[in-house]
Length: 368
Image 1: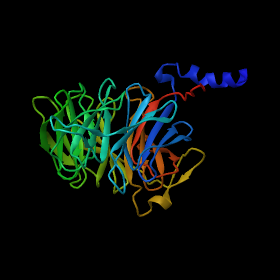
Image 2: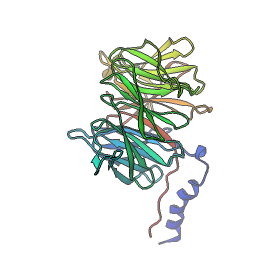
Image 3: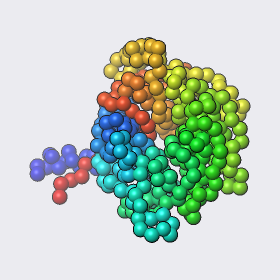
Image 4: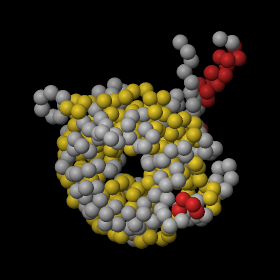
């Protein structure tokens, strides 16, 4: 190998030694129809990598260090039973995790089907996946991929997972039964089932660490749930937009943003009084886009752009930004919260579903 070529290969490795907050911002986007995880450069809008994961990837979670992502492969024509562990610096699947193991003291092993939602537990040593068809929260060793156990739950359907700040409880939302399962992590057992409302879907933990907000798709409402270990119950419910889908908080907890799937908007709420303070229209005719203006009228005229995944990046820093995935039109939008508008758009080659983020440098492994 020439010295010049070796130098070129070493440059990314030197860059990757920088602290994480110096690394470029990447957006990780799942696409169930294509079976891909996209890694998109947030500044240029370029798709840096299209990673073939399993069939019907739905959710994606990123480790605290940002160097690993896990994707739940729920399946499309047939129920899936695997997760894909991805190295975000090499842009490669480093392990396919097959969800097969024991539940409690039952003899033999079972396969856990249709993992719809996934998360890392604090510290990044364990992964949890909510298997809809098997009605279990599965615990996985993040290093070996071995299934450590599973906690059966009672709720029907799975939409989202939220992990309590201390990592002692995991919350699983159930759109069919309209409930939230509370799983005790140390005991790997169902702690309680909280009845909520119709179509309970995506959730977000309030920065105060005391509340969990859950959207209810079929009742067009948002529920506020206490996550205190001694008092886990619904506190109140208030009206939302048309078919709320995803919800996030600003870092100070003063505002909540919620995508409205049918109306193609984002509602912004004052968290102190649960009142909507504005709405961001995702169907603007023209916005400043990467590479020039983006015409959205053809996508949105008379139809919703179908906003799905919503994420805040770099929460609590001057670089805090919001991005939303639009399923109709294969688009990511960056949101200007001050101007309450779409700031720019990023075109995607496939239909997006969920979006997450990481700050990592691309690193290439030297040949052995």
